[in-house]
Length: 248
Image 1 (spheres, rainbow, N blue to C red):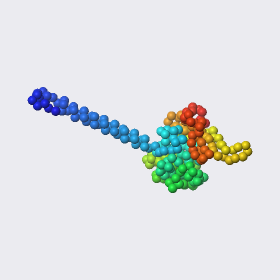
Image 2 (image 1 turned 60 degrees about the vertical axis):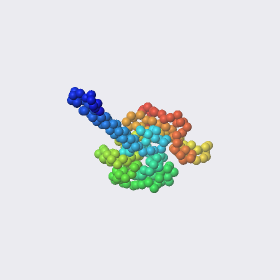
Image 3 (image 1 turned 135 degrees about the vertical axis):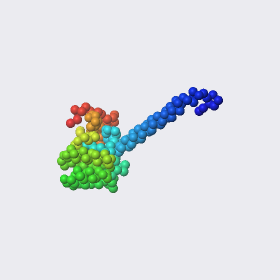
Image 4 (image 1 turned 30 degrees about the vertical axis):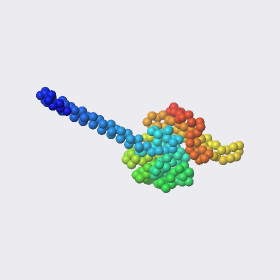
């Protein structure tokens, strides 16, 4: 760093090379550390999504179910089981609270692992307490409120979900839910001229994002003749975004 034989007194006494160079290196190190932290934080936030059925994932904000979030689901058992199948297949434990008619055989056909499924069919008046307790140990929890909860109870449950990283699927409306999923234009197939049996159902699934308020919809088989959930041919061109007033 010094050129011996050509070093002047002025060069020795000038403080800039001694002070500025370490400062520059320190600033660069801090900037690199900040960039690394931002990168790690982004990865952590991305990893907070849990998978759901690909036919529905594209409609959801972020492309999946968020840990610590609440989703309102129209009272459809098939839509509910479709949402549960992805997390269950990925290894998440799931619980269903306050839905006694939830069918385990149908759930198994939809791909839900019964060995990681817990049912609490009759929680009674303590449904909110039971839901919160189950959310402490389960990845995805389904509940059907028999009555509206107080604002303070909702706030406490939301904080608990965020702390535990659990996802709550509420059958019915719920304040401050991440998104609302609903069905419309249901059409059954399989009945001929006075004979036959119901073999498949085609529906429109609409997801309304709480943040943007703009609904997105897709036409799906729920299920098709082979008891599979998939997008119908009429939706092959992509998802549609409907004006807000078009949803009712």
